[in-house]
Length: 211
Image (tube, rainbow, N blue to C red; front, side, top):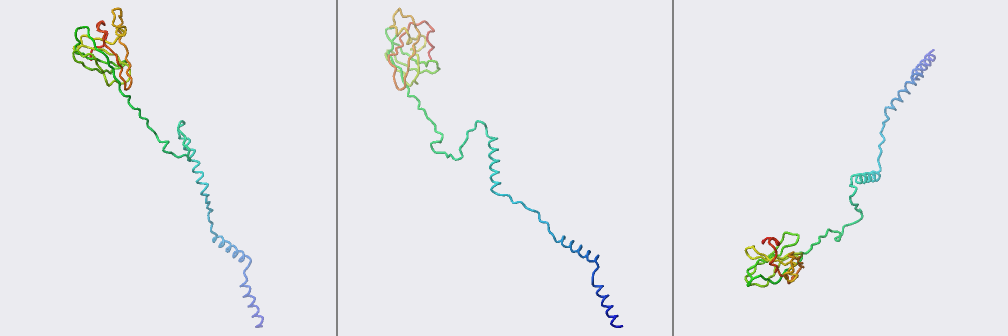
């Protein structure tokens, strides 16, 4: 009888230790939840290629520069280098050396009064003159820039004048009636001689007023 009771007790203990199917399912479900709780989701990080980024950046800058550059802007070769010969050079032109006009003086009288002999620049406002003494027979006007001039001699009060005209070139003959002033060419560094303002017979107002 004792043996039977002892065996019955052992069976009961074993039955208590062995879990039921529902308990097994609950245990498995709890284990799965525990395993899921231990899983860490790590986001995938993309690491771009550095060389690719640099190339794309330079390409974008090149396109932007082309769009903003004026249409007529010069194109600079990136491989070219500036040399001393490519520097801006300045050309300096020397001022021409001045020339002069000279000639013989005359006057329709027994003497030659003091005169002011003037060289007027043709098509310009410049002039130069020289004052002579009584009975001086020659003159020279210096410091003239190269160009064309017309020459007139005046007595000092400006009331009477004689010019270098067509009449002088004609020989101052009575038959020579052209009193037009002649153009005289002055060359750099040279004197233009034999310019004689001897036409004292021109009508009043034929020549410029004395400066």
